[in-house]
Length: 233
Image (tube, rainbow, N blue to C red):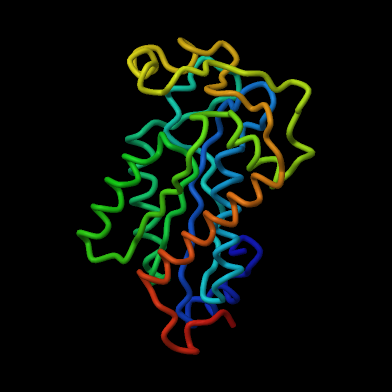
């Protein structure tokens, strides 16, 4: 992890040509049973999984704030908004590319997608080799079975199963107009979109493995491991 290094140690990684993986998450409500850090935890786990597969990947400290305006009204939600996130990513990557030739942003929150895309488009127009990985999976939209299973696989002690309860279980297209006008609070008083019932750590572990497989393959397509120099010191 980059956060554990001194600047001289970081310089050795830079000299070896590592890819910098930047997890981008959020701090927002995830129902009464999941921690506020759930999206950040997932993004960090995917990045760490990539680093475990590829010796030429270094994981940066996670960005724990994102565009979470749809979760306003729930205590604990800390949103910086789309414009601020876009600017943060642009300036962070401009700084990072002073040292790192290749950067992959690993997203963990759906509300971040558009500002991240805009930031990457701008950075790439400046000839910076920055890529974006957007994990995709089926399941409940928010704090339902899928995210509960993922968090059970990552840190079961932080999942309060006795508090888990279904939220609004209607299909997302049906509630989207209300979500856009009033946020999650308008459709789900407990913050859950879906039903966490039946979630297991085994299910979450299998999904994590699949997502890390996809991230690893996508990274290989962007940047094949072509020489022994591209390994961590």
